[in-house]
Image 1 (spheres, helix red, strand yellow):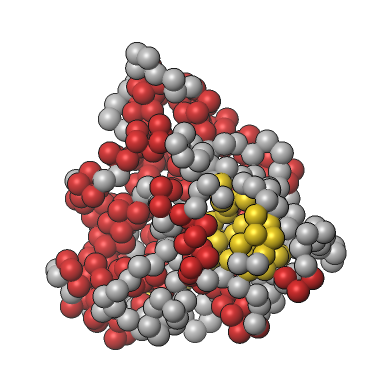
Image 2 (spheres, rainbow, N blue to C red):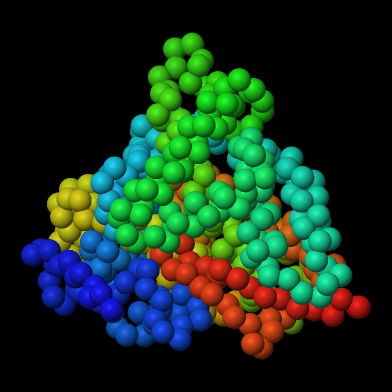
Length: 407
């Protein structure tokens, strides 16, 4: 086995170093959330340095994660990858700090407002229904391969105006980007995704429509516009890799929980047509299954809570641990589907809050409304082989489910 390279700069004190690898799956572990939660049991410093993958700080508390989201003067979204690679693209608008990020943020925001997303409800429901129809009568499915990996991904490709027949290819490309640790492999993967996007936008400029790609192209060509072709590709790259991964993982975790919690299934089923109660339950599930570990870069030498951090240091913000902070959430490890005060950080905070949060909630809501009336009772087989992954996004590569198709 190759020895992991440990990187500990001189400004990092030994008592702040914790041998924690963002990407590692310890032997026997069945859930990547567990390795994060174990940090809370080991007494790790609330701000610690991980020496692996080039080295980075990690914030463990709600207060510190929130501070990094809000204080963009100190914590920049313009960053390299973890582990660091040369040539990491500047992803518009997420990797651009205010005020420059607003050009693309303002361009895309109208497409993802609550009103705009609500207009997609019938489309999302129809797509969910079609997927369920394909396996409901069989009594089993792999939830990732047959549902959660296809609904949000297909919907994203539809909104972008991309070829949905290439869904499996696009999922594979995104999976490599999110999971790969080898810098050379990541560079090649980025080049592969950019090649797909270049070809797509070259063809798209001859058949404009009402999709996101057309909006970006029309913004570039508008009189007086300073939007460049490269910025459009960078923006599409971000939407591509972000849109094909996080909702799939979140939805899979929710269904795994429901497969093991009969009372929760019945509780949600009872409020499927009660928007306020259903929304409250979904917010709690989102709090409990925050799959993203977000990156920031320190913009200047600074001391925060007695910890000296240098210009260029990377910082990881694990939303799942912020959402377990008992100073903010009462009984944080308990899933309370009626929880009222729920200021979770699953979608981030501030000017870079997740642009697609309303769409994600619509997809989860519509899926529950379509699934539970058809398949109200389901479980995971006792011998299920559930493969997992960790990194900037955590999740399950597969989730076998079973139910009585005769009922």
